[in-house]
Length: 93
Image (cartoon, rainbow, N blue to C red; front, side, top):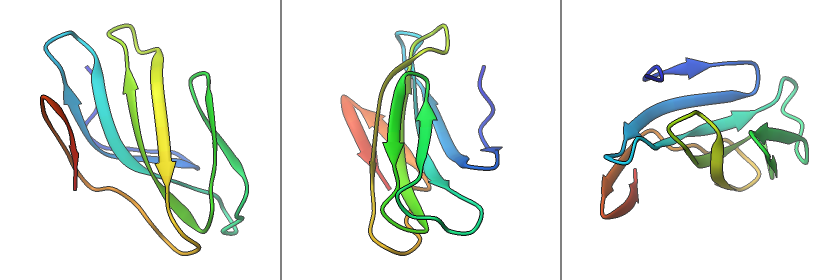
């Protein structure tokens, strides 16, 4: 099982939701020391570039932990997601 809260130098997971399939949907943010915009964070085989100091990210992993997809969004300042609800489709908070 993945931890509910993970913090690394560039990625922060605020909430994970396990799915009946064994997959997991996670919501959080990614950022860089020095607030560098245009830098890239890698989520498995998906590379995402940030638009500002921190960007929101949602990603889905398979039961084995491999990344199935990841998407990000944000502006020039601090953006993030602090929760995710899965009811048929993802609902972000």
